[in-house]
Length: 314
Picture: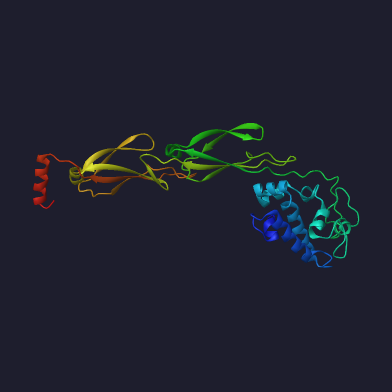
């Protein structure tokens, strides 16, 4: 995993340029090779903090790093890219050493082994390396991933759907077709391999992630793979029993028998009328929640009948 440059310097992302410079100055004085001769751990630490400073002190590189994050930044930029056009003598000027000298050595010896040459590893001669970059071919880099939010209906969750979207990548627009599987859940992501941003220097494209948002349904409430619908009946129907027509997500209507003496908020199960299981066989169930209503207005005759029922203990 790529190093986090802010963590390397012990800073958070809100740190100002001045804070970054002051922190680097303190760490560089502590881990400079002339202060720690032969100490490999200090050498590695000095390399890491210098790389972090080279990025975070450059407004353009810092913007790229803050936008893409450490992992994606390390895939897009090599160490050569990070130090390209970077004035190393400025580091020593920031430290108060001038363009050379200080801590027992000068700029060219510490960073370039006595002579700065184009294409050289900036730390190569300090730490014994002799890596050559001048003739190296640019390394392929994977493109960044993209994310798109897609809103679908509960009916589309039930039946599945074919979708098309136009995605702008740079100056070009790409039409992408894909299927939304049955039974998909809210906030679940579909991965479309290779449909992200194109790679660099021949590298593979990134992926496109489709984040699913499910629009609330006016009648049905989803509970995992089950669905619930509410149906109101009168007090007399609750006592005597009644047959009702119940809609389903498939678009059909089913007749359901409500048994006598059904209580308020009773759920009646309709097996297999729920949502398909995601990428599996089978379906959930549909539940009909029975609500017994009390009329707001009664005729004189109805009131008399209710009073008679009340006398009978109802």
